[in-house]
Image (cartoon, rainbow, N blue to C red; front, side, top):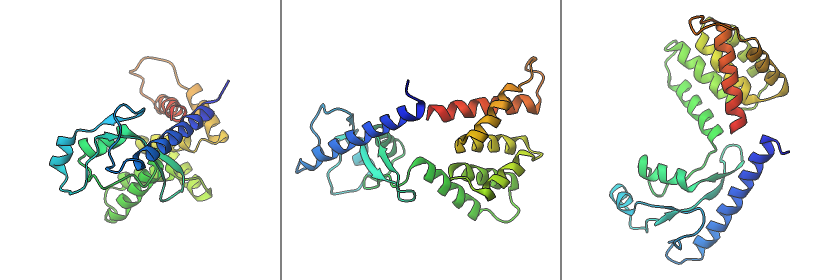
Length: 214
C-alpha cells in the first residue's frame, strides 16, 4: 500500500508530465492558441480577459497546466489551468504575469514582508503569529525550534495554536509524536468545557489531517 507521500509524489510527477506535453503542443502552434478538447484544458473567458488587459498580444482561448521552477527553493511545480483561470479572471492578474514561487515560498515571503513593514511594538501578537507561520513554512533549525517552544508556552492561546500548526508542517517524527499525544490527551465532556487541552487536541488533529491531505 502506498503512503500519502508516495501518492502526492506520483500526482505531482503526473502534473509535471502533463504540463510538459501541453507546453510542447502550445509551442507547435504559431498563433499560440490551443487545440480544443485537449486533456487538462480549461476554457478562458476571452471577453473578460480583453476587458481587463490592454495588450496587443493574443489572449488565450484555453488554459493548460504549466510547469515552472520555484524562484526561491528551485522546486519543480505546476501552475494548474484552474489556478491560472482564477488568477487571470477572478483576481484580474495581468495576462503577462506567471507563477514564479511555490505556495510555501509565497507564504514565507508574505510573512517576511508583513513583519518588515510593521512598526516596532505595533500589533505584537500579529507579528509573532506571522513569524511563526513563516517558520512553519521553512525548514526547521535550532533557533526556529527554540522560538516555537517559547510560543507553546505563550499566554495567548492563538499563538500556541499557530505553533502547533507549524509543528505539523515540519512533519518530523518527534513533532508528529507530540501532536498525536495532544490528540490522545483530549479531555472528554461537552462543548461547554473549553480548556486549553481541548483546543490543543482539536488544533493538532486538524493540523495532522491538513498535512496528510496536501
